[in-house]
Length: 162
Image (tube, rainbow, N blue to C red):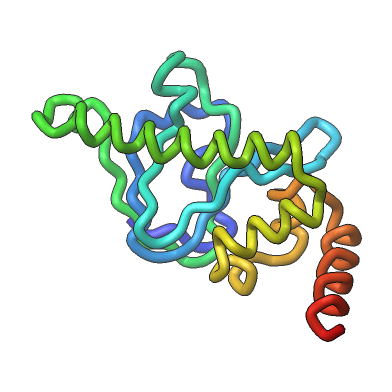
């Protein structure tokens, strides 16, 4: 399937019983609060596979939306079909391991690292995303304001030059 920019693959409240494989493009998982503030849970790009684990495990609707930031080409694999495959348990286990590793690292960083440390980690972990993702969305992923991100970048640039 193809998905143009600014189009949601699913919205908060949907029941996405899919495994998504990103063949091309960039997406974001976003949460929008009642007051309009937006937070970005994750980014997904070429080679990523993802599932809404909350929906899968609880049966409850999705708590976030997934939206294309760039033109995307995706494979959508219904979980009901995947569960019938002999390789599904190993595949599922792998997806859980990857997700747990990412979540554990992000949780520790949010608990122990300041905004600058979070941005430096973002640059180390996802170097190509800094050029592909708009600044305000990087800030939303890091849990800071765009102004704070701008100040952090200026400080880092000054340090690198000095």
